[in-house]
Image 1 (cartoon, rainbow, N blue to C red):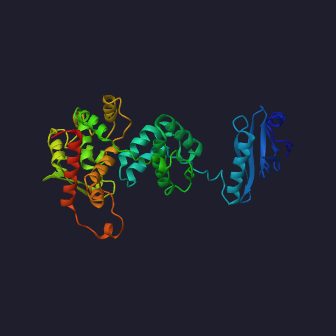
Image 2 (image 1 turned 120 degrees about the vertical axis):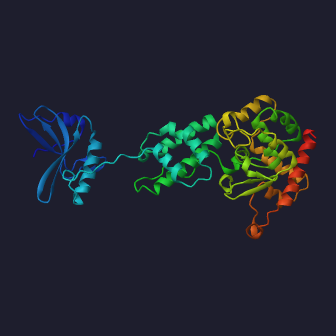
Image 3 (image 1 turned 180 degrees about the vertical axis):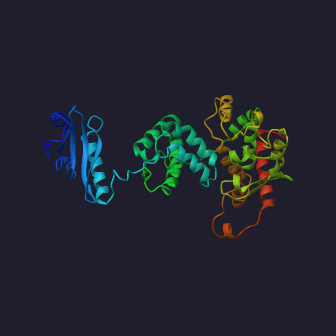
Length: 390
């Protein structure tokens, strides 16, 4: 069998074509990227000048020849890499020609995200779904999951940081990493492309300490009155509750002035009981009962205010001179106002649903309804005094 001295595209083009049939030029032992080409590797040239990479091998006493691919479609490096992988299989006793490996279609990133949302036990799956839909799927939802690389993730995070801020980029990273780690448990071949240091913001940077001043509350209170979302904001302030807890409030959760938030909707995954103040109840009871939904605060056609929409932006447009604030600042303000009103710290923490540390948090199962009711009435009195309503 003739041999070839150098394995380059130029040397391959110069190989002479036989008058008929084909000739294989032996290319075993030539250095490619610092390693010798595998045994049996060569270049076949046909009478019409076509050239292709081949691998000759013997298995069970039978000589076989496998065509790797055309030299026009494969680079030297790619062909040698494929030959090495084939040679490893042959050395293990596998015959690539007799038992071709069936290549299964790889699941895409989008398919993995959908499976994750369907099967993983998530406290707020709608938050994950929103991030995946807005950022991850448009970027590489159709990409096979095994082709996902660190470069792809960082490019996505850079884009989110530039257009949506560092905090959103870090949140997208956390949600996407959770999905990929979940899939890695199920797929032996998948290695999640995440390393320490990819987050765009630290916990300290994400933490906020802003509370609304009395003057800011006086500006916002009448503005809250012009929209359903604004009225929900009033209840957030009067209860110290989170946005989603109030905007997803249902009429059947309220009985005898007590609002019971089910564990499925609460951050700590525990039922939370809120004895509503008279001021909060007045706002809630003023909301219309709609036949299309059981939500207390709903948008057009009964839509939830917690999903989509520009409700907060509309409030901002109505208060152009007000410094930037977030809906969560209302919860922090409520906690601060309870302290101003003389509410015991442990009771204030129970009102907003924070876990009580130490032995008391483990063994004390008293509901503290009376104490929480008193605390929320004191909070309501503080709000009345600030905004000047009766």
